[in-house]
Image (tube, rainbow, N blue to C red; front, side):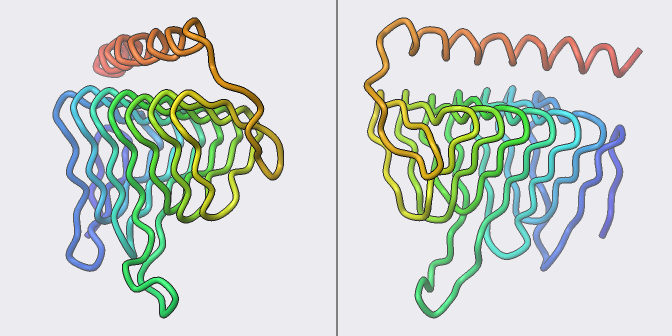
Length: 186
């Protein structure tokens, strides 16, 4: 089944339909496919693809996935019968053109512009993956760490100012989502 909502393509596949909170902002041009759940005041920006055709994707409250990003998951396989669902917690910032695949980003995690997060990875609360970095399969970032590079490695611990700036970014995107939703309705 294919549905269109204000320029957003919603697709039901394998009996699973996207579930989107009423207060979430989904920009025109997005494709939301299958077993996707999007929480309150989350924002999915222009031309993102969230495809949960083989497992599940969860996006928590107030999290944002910025323009052109792709989020996917991996289904069951002999080496991993549970597959790799993608879980994005609350208050997560994901930069433009990021690729998020079969991983966990805990509450208040941050993924920089153009970064890649692969199967089985975890980005802990208040941790940051730098712009352009590639977190290879199974890597685990601890709370408050900054990782960067290809492949990504720990660079340093984040200071309180960097963590506070990430939280301000979340508030900015919640408000900006409301502004864009109002502009689209006009």
